[in-house]
Amino acid sequence: MNKLPVFKTVGQTFGFVVERRFFSLLRLIWLPALLSVVVAFIPLFYQIDTYGFNALGEKKFEQINADPILNALQWFNMLASFVLTAIIAISVHRMILLDDQQKGVYFYWRLTREEWLYVAAWIGYLIIVLIAAGLPIAGHGYWLYTHEWGRQWPHFPTFPSPEAAKAIVGFGEALRADPRTFIVGFLSVLFALVALARFGLVFPIIVAEGRLSFARSWVLTRGNFLRLVGFWIIVFVLTYVLVLIMMAILAVAVAAMLGGVLAGGKTVGALSIIVFAVPAAISLLVYLVVGITLFIAGISFTYKALAEPQTAGEHAEDATPALA
Image (tube, rainbow, N blue to C red):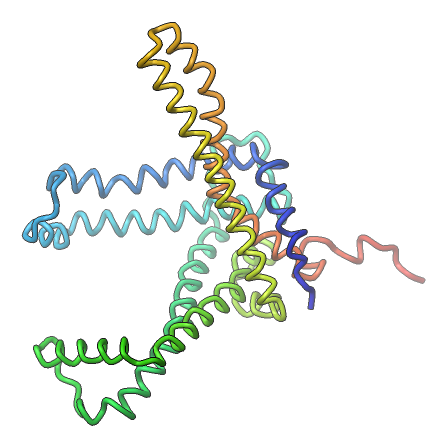
């Protein structure tokens, strides 16, 4: 199996997003990203319009939770966020894996079988990670109940009831006091990391191979768990630093524009806006593109490094002459 070249893949990821394809990425993602923001605000606007800004009261909180329109809007927002994220992610994967740059397209919208497979893969990915993280906890809880707590609660009380609430509180206190809980928590995090790393290539596989296969991701990542963890730690740290720098530039530019307007009069204020609007806009665009596409690009380049040449779009038989 191929071994992931960690630092080379990190360089490819950042070079692609920040340098080589920055404007192409911006051209393709701005519309789905804007729509996702608009859709996310719909439930909030409805809640404010219906219940006002103060929703802290117990009675009003119960009304909000029982509001069928608000619940429907929240479900719609969740589904829309999955779909819009899939549209963005597929466009990035296709650009990296298939060199599909969609030249001349400024209002990108593509909803095909690949995007729906991506939504299904994302839901399945979350379920697998949650199951992996919950296995040590469930196993530990079952062993404790059958071997230690069963004598105190031979028959678990019917829920909801005061006895059931008391039993749950007792379980929680016993877990916090149990020194084995730390080990179980460590195993839960470890299992979740394994699932995140080993099944993460399911997303570029949809584009590169035209199928949704968690098994294929598991095979490709065999023997690369520590390399994958190291890769994502480096990517996360560098992304965090880059985002902090962009936000600092944006904050300084906005403060300079406001300071010029408030303290310098019309002429100085207009000049400060002209001077500092450019770095503010650049930092905001870099923050947008990096924050949305960098991790998607990282998955794509990880797939390219671990997949066979044929599945990565590089046909070995076409690259070398046939031998007589």
